[in-house]
Length: 542
Image (cartoon, rainbow, N blue to C red; front, top):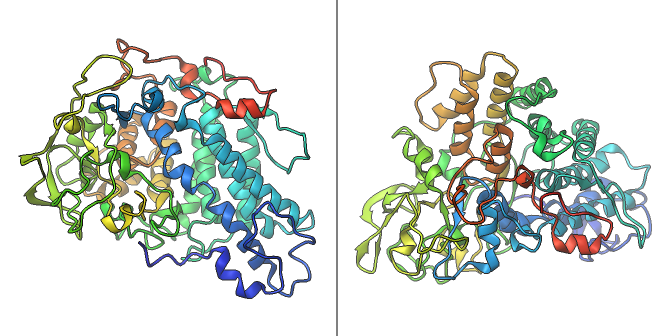
């Protein structure tokens, strides 16, 4: 459990808001008057208190299901089944095979995102049209980010810019129109958001969060503005927003607020990370006790880790909750990590080959082998299936549990995990390292020099050997693969670089049910959303 979380939540304002509307009521509750008028309390404090639920609304979604859809559809991870266990109606395997179904549980976050947008709209409606941009900007920024998630994942999306009256529904708008709307919103509000980066602004929209989102939007502009998702071609589709991307990144860099260090790479993702990480521009805060929902270690950890001592997390207490162990690194991604410089600290993000227990304080490997049933454990790069079908089943034996490299990037401790398998690792959404590499990529795409210095800032910090010449796009693509491994950006990168239809385990052309339809660059609209919106049509190709 974290003790250094200092960001402000609604409860911290209760004393200041005596006499105002009860802050413990559901966010959908309507206020009887404009809360910014006549209360005798700083109206920005009232807005901030009401916004807390909106800021953290996607905590559960980002902590599990959204992650499953993003990382399993990329070349980072594959799903395994253990003699049928964890097949779960194919929800994980379907993402890995690019064969998603509208009923897959791994996609059931669509409704969560729209609910978060609705909460933001309710607050904006309560503030009224006379509210200043400074008051409305945080809600609009979160709304823009949530809309970005829908547009990036599902293509055409509703522009939910108001609270609907009973019986009304939103139409889905073309992806290009949604991207343009997000850009317009961010351009209008960015300079009205706080520039402060403090524990009190941590996890909340700032000017820099809006700018980072805008940079991400611009870098993918050629992807998002095609008439049809399958029309995008990485080699020929022109991006008209490259200069805008460079300029936005430069503005963030020029602020001198953010830094890659001094914290070493592995500690940025540890259970006690937080506002002290200068690399984090915008993050979702988690705590295993009070801000639950982050469960990345659950499917990534050795399946039979429960009650094992010693274990590779180096803990002195046992893990009393079970692990899934069903999401392992693909052989292709494992090979990327094996090829890294021996000094590259990012190698520590994965466990492969002979496994040694880590020191729980330094997070570094010790000389003590990790043992299971009195045998030393080795994780294999290649994955041997029990049968060649879409279950991706490896059987159910000690050898089965050692198939594939495992991610240990999101380090855990028993005191956290034993509370319902939750973790206290905060999830970075936008990092300064991403800004540097986005600018480098945009410069290379625009034919400009100077990208080598930006890439080398990241590589030098990670203790990798620096580049000695200007990077190619493929080198930047490879750099992003290891720098942002297991951070939910790989699918986005693969599509932009034209590698989403590549072959990677088990997404092979000779594999049953592996799909290479370019229309599957976006997910199907979930059945629940289609049922709620009878006028919506399913995405083509599904």
